[in-house]
Length: 437
Ligand SMILES: Cc1cc2nc3c(=O)[nH]c(=O)nc-3n(C[C@H](O)[C@H](O)[C@H](O)COP(=O)(O)O)c2cc1C
Image (cartoon, rainbow, N blue to C red; front, side, top):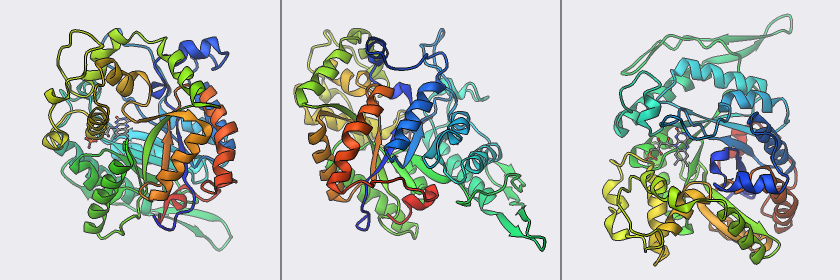
């Protein structure tokens, strides 16, 4: 990490990561295109991110939904959205999440290689394993696989897509014509049989970047073998340092260099010219959220199943298991659990309402929330940058298009002045941007 000069900023473009009161707020503040075409906000955000020299846009993937009727939210599938955004932008990286639990590797290798080709080498694959039984039931499974099996499948899955992508080459023939050759991989494993070759030509970066999100022991082991960047949920600088140490140990055990894979935590910024203005933004958004209805959801998503009399009662931290005791067994996302646990421990007296706000209502799931002025925010980012434990941030704005535009206008110039952010587009192929940091 020591050699890295600039922060990477990635924009997380999923509406689900906005504040839960954002739609009403945007309606009242003239922001946001018609949601019926949910690609339009992605397009506007992507173009704004490119103006702000972001390294990449990140789209999480919700591979199903639960209940019937299911709550609203119908974003386009990430790879499909990026096929359009690739032609509306010139250098923004396009990192699509897709689940190794639900796809077949040949299908996905082909789709992602196609985005890589369409974008001239800007595609990335955020390889996740997902957590939901309801989603799994859309993919011919009775229930989701247990964590160990999920990650074994993901490991084999990534072996296959990497082999398919890497067994391709470009040759210039005697007539000066570019021709593409690819080879069979003859894979026969525990989960998949894939002959190959892949039928999509390589992009200028050879193959898509592989990113990973999943912070349990088996998740880190898969990241250490395959990932070129990881999406984490450090809510404190200490947690970022602890994660860095754990990832580095796993990388070294795999024969890779410590620090060679940047860890990029999520971050939700509430900003204004002054701190009071930022607090007012949060208050105005909070006003749109029926907290009593949200509390049970917020707790269940962490596997926290207990009753409470009043939403303003203190949150009973002593009733939930310490993260270390559930690290490899919890069904939900370990990093979310850890982040939320740490947050509650660091905020004594936090009520059920506060925990609901932190974990669900205020956007970005359990990721760190920052509330303050533009200048305070730049100071905060500079501190994290100076620690050298993170490669940058995956930003999730409480409001959608409005938040990104405000950030690009107000914060980006301040970061450039501070010397911790590039003042021009990074035009290298995506994989090179994250390499060796
Ligand atoms: C920051 C972060 C983002 C994630 N994004 C997605 C996603 O978009 N879609 C998905 O199906 N799973 C997503 N996951 C879930 C992981 O792939 C994994 O299934 C889950 O975190 C449980 O494994 P773990 O305990 O090792 O983290 C995400 C996890 C993390 C930590």
